[in-house]
Length: 274
Image (cartoon, rainbow, N blue to C red):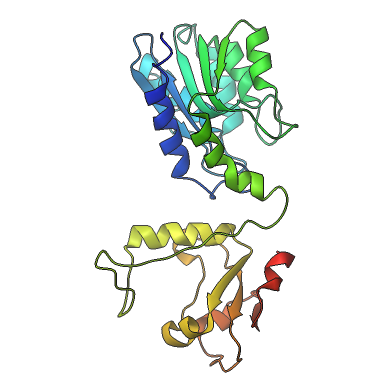
């Protein structure tokens, strides 16, 4: 397998991870790909939510189903169950399989078992890694794999891997702030619904992970929004209305969400408290 082989699988892994960027809070977004002996793509996985299976586990789960036609775990989102099933039933099918992973496989066991130990126990041939894990508690998976005789190559599309990690790195030290903008293809932003249902559902999923949503006063007065996460079945964040005056109609839906704190301020300093 030459040095150029992992570039396409790593691009697929990065793309898969970006689909869940921010939705994995407080974990980083991660993607993984299983590669067959001749370089074919066997599976693509991504970490979807904190506490759920990591990207490597989803990729290994789907590669196992593809290679064996055993679909007993194909729909499972139980990380511990998938780990144990693969360890018990793999039968050596992964000995010619390589992986591309956007982040060094975790060496520790927390809410989910260690990915590095699973990769080791399945006998994966080689692992290509974009970025080292910056979390000391989880780092060390590469060394664990190397010590087991599994070839590990770091730095595949490293810049892209570190860009993917940026939100995770930022919220280790303080609030992570991101900007959301919606407009139509013709550039307009007024006159009714702007985004598709799929786009709005994604935004609601992001709101579910947010502690505070900041909105301009004139947008509140004009749009009279709710700003909850109902399309994703999630929680509604607190709201900071950025305005010099507090002349708002309190019957606007965003003021009526139970358990939500709404404040009006001409400063953005409250962001620091979140």
